[in-house]
Length: 168
Image (cartoon, rainbow, N blue to C red; front, side):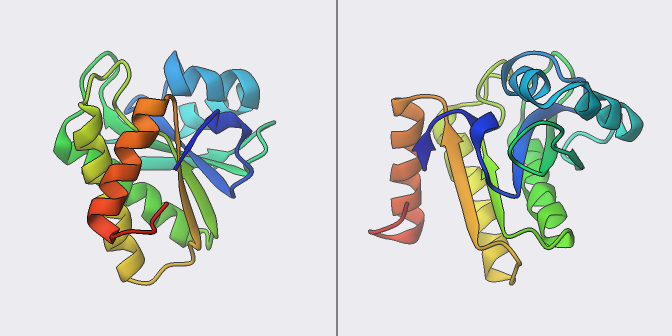
């Protein structure tokens, strides 16, 4: 868990908090589009729309990360639900494993414009990561890159609750 800028991550992939139309507008998606370049939106347009709760993968353009996984937890202008957050997180992890990626960085999906509660986001996303890791995966590092001290503390507390002391 770190507070920082997701677009600066050097992990194999970063995860975009996406809408199912895969339109890179504001928030995390806007930052990814701005730093990564127009080629990311072009690839998104070729993939989308996708089902809410699904994910798609594109190249990272000019980002340090080679890949961007677009986790569609909402409709454009809509809200994130627990089921959609679980599904899009799970599918993001599956796509990373299908590409044999070793590292991935997630934001707190759905907690911005989609108004999903931060504590619930931390609980659900970490449950999906723990479940995925237990099935065997190529991933060796799953990082959460969070937008504030509060978000980092919330995710850290939840990781400690789920994994015991010494996590993070």
